[in-house]
Length: 125
Figure (tube, one colour):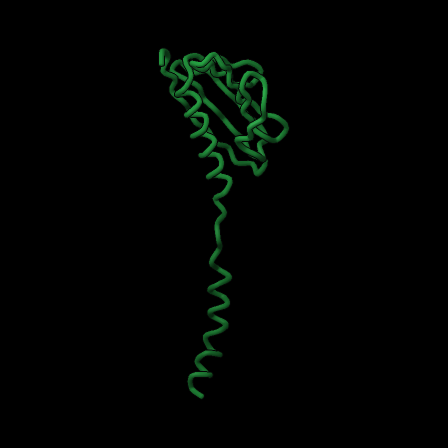
């Protein structure tokens, strides 16, 4: 009988404790960091780049041109203007800015979060 009483007294506190514990969803942040990793890998394979119309063009060693651009709410990768590899979904805006030592990328998601990353470009791979 004492055990049943203890259980009934602790149940409201247990329910309150479970309500205060909030689970966080890091999916968006992890997806953006994966995007940064993919772009870094593409940059490392490139010998030159240029930015035009808010798209990044990477000139690869095998004479291919990789384009990273925003398409609707996606960030996509294309090779020589063909294909459609999705790097990130749910993007509000994408901005590339040329820096003296590389490329600055700014992303604003549909959720309102803003992420920035500067990639160092080593010419003459």
